[in-house]
Image (cartoon, rainbow, N blue to C red; front, side, top):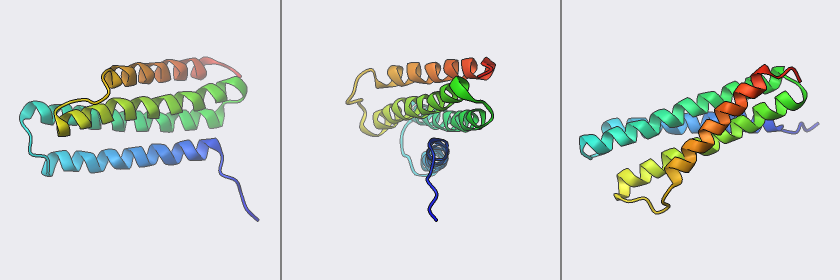
Length: 130
């Protein structure tokens, strides 16, 4: 008998992988990255945002599991927004530190806006009854 993996499970797995990558990237920044203090601070910011938003996505999965209807849907969407925004924001900063330039201008601010939308949507989902 096969069991299908649902959207919540996929989001949870992606959040876990995002968090695991943040740990690895944080370790690299602490022990293997040879840059000045400013760039190291940029790297740390990227790692912190990535980790916090991965944890936020776990909250979205949890809320989607206890809510129903539209509130559950909003919770899942907010989780995807948190992951997408964090990856856009953080990857832009990682590339900046490693290459000295950002190939896609505006990616970090766009990622930040996506993260804020995810948190706002999570707040709405949290107060909705269904």
